[in-house]
Image (tube, helix red, strand yellow):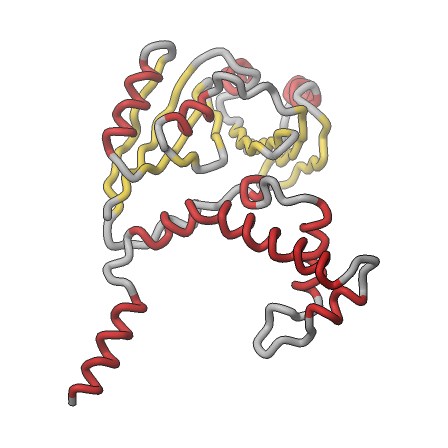
Length: 244
């Protein structure tokens, strides 16, 4: 099975267009979390006071440093409504967004991966209808590993996992429950909590189920370009040895 990767840049009105146009050496990287945006800004050389003032208006500054390599700032801001956003359009066309979004010189740079090339073409056609767009590359990914930049957003992996389920999962992980051999049992884990063993086990199993379900799309992407199923290869080897 082949995968299709498309990289493109678009230009339209957004909070970062003006600042990235005004400061052509500035690079803005944008990550979407469950309830906020994290923005990383870098620029070579010493920043002007005007640039620093503009950055302060983007959100809460979490980190700021100026060194020989230049400016490095990390900010956090409220998550703008994603209704009819470009990210939602990716999902509509079954395209997996690869964060971060990169803003430079007034352009937003995106990369997506899809199972079907027609989905990529349909997405690009729709985007061309209401914004400037320039396709940078379209590549078929075959018989190679998915790029390491294909990172599963943490908020997507833990979507719908409740706080109690998360706590049960973390206790099991930190207590060595998933190590081989196991260092603890469900009974011992439950004894460390204020709930019955059956209740603790229910929280843990639901957490495991949701986590694996949420990670499923990323697992399929990582294994989609494998030349052969290693489990089937092992079965063939064992059958061959038996025949000999």
